[in-house]
Length: 224
Image 1 (cartoon, helix red, strand yellow):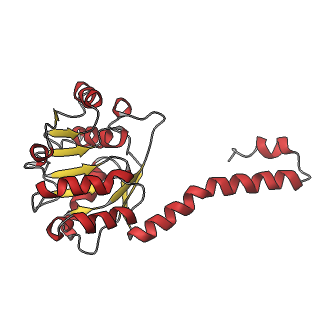
Image 2 (cartoon, rainbow, N blue to C red):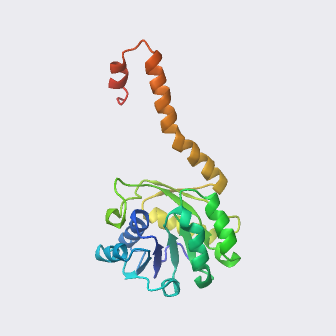
Image 3 (cartoon, rainbow, N blue to C red):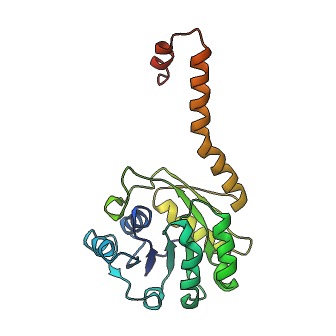
């Protein structure tokens, strides 16, 4: 399987900002011929069709996953385990699977519990670090991932070709792709999420004890 073959069938589980933007980006790149959506809200799914984000609303899980080339899990990370349990019986042996969860160790744990080894060989956990002011499928945009970072955290049993394929798809979305182990990802992201609060605390502490004019400090804070 070469990395440049378009997906005949892309399945998005959770068609919101993240899943919808992935669908639009791959459609724009000419790498998704048919896109099927799976979601809880029928109104949201119908809106996704109207907006051209997906081509088809899944009637049931088995039908949705039939002949799927790639399954993109974009529902809230807390639903990952239940979703994997639900889709596992219908997975083809060579179907590519990736996700967008913001934490990875719990995703890996769920995969090892619910996905057979043959499917884990084609599972590439991922985390696109991107967002927008608004959420929902109506906020989805084809360029959401342009110049954004995507971190892939393959399992030891994940196949090299699967990683290459998912990396290529994210690069086709305009993203900068890197790799790291799941535990390292969670440590790094946890640390960086607290960094703005630490910097704000440090600045306020400095202002309280500094003889410099607060107006001057704030005036030049954004310069250069």
